[in-house]
Length: 174
Image 1 (tube, rainbow, N blue to C red):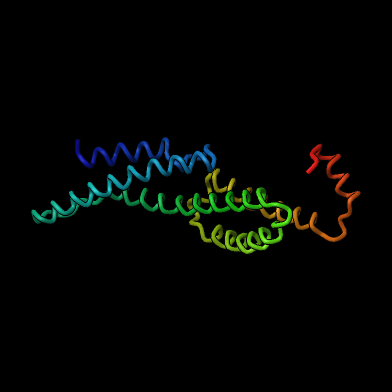
Image 2 (image 1 turned 120 degrees about the vertical axis):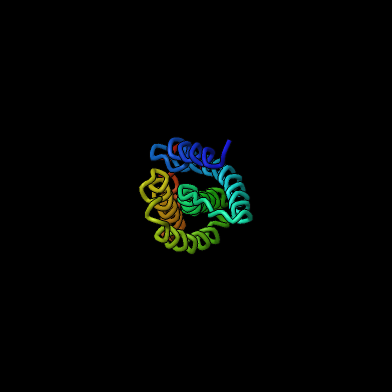
């Protein structure tokens, strides 16, 4: 089995089952990226060894352009999925915060939302076509809405009668 055939097989598998397949969501994309990234590392090591051997014998180095393209995609998708994970973590922190600690969690999350928005704007255009990117934007909006809601519920104008209405509407007594 040659490296060229392995790269061809990997490229085909990447295109058909990779983390950038438009029909998958962010969580599945993260799992697939992890799997493909480990395969990518293995192929890059082999490519480096083959190129070193070619150099030793004075042969021209074989280019594996498709491998480099996938490397770039892995990097770009890695940035997007890392941001997705950070947004999810922030949402969970707010959800798990006690009412007493909520102000601290909100202040930290407010700073992070600004950072997340900037990171989202800096993502490569190639990842913005994926369903996972839409999920990231949705979750970022949801985080902002969650923060706005908690902020409104913490306002001094909210009285006991308002909480009774919230309990009645949600069916949850917290």
